Length: 151
Image (cartoon, rainbow, N blue to C red; front, side):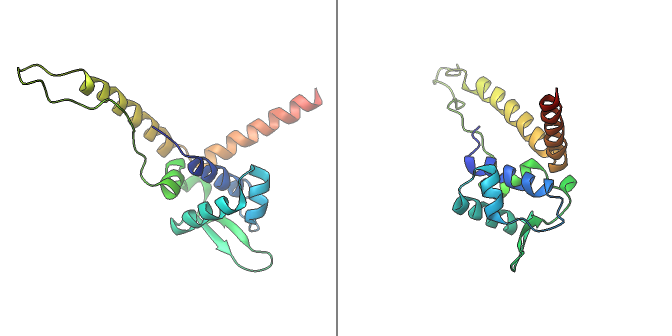
């Protein structure tokens, strides 16, 4: 299983928007600077997220982007699929049909079964984890940083 930089950047971008609480639109340039994402690449990602209905754009001098629905309703899997398409499992082990004498050639089908279990667990996690969950993690991490700074 492979996750692209585009998918990771997509998650970072929507998390940035979620942490902004949707009060005012966030400019792509600000997200790019905070998250270290090349601006042109981020604009492509935001366009895909907009087309998927996960973010909306606001025009004007004080325009930018914001989430189109509550963070509780956006799952990490939704973001990855919006920017990368369906999540696929890339494995080398392919099931084999046999060698002609009634014996299965290799153990590809057994290995393939393990990879399917792995993919199912990953998909379960991606589709269970919401942006709200990531926001809580980000806030907890920030609290720990503040506490460590003051100690």
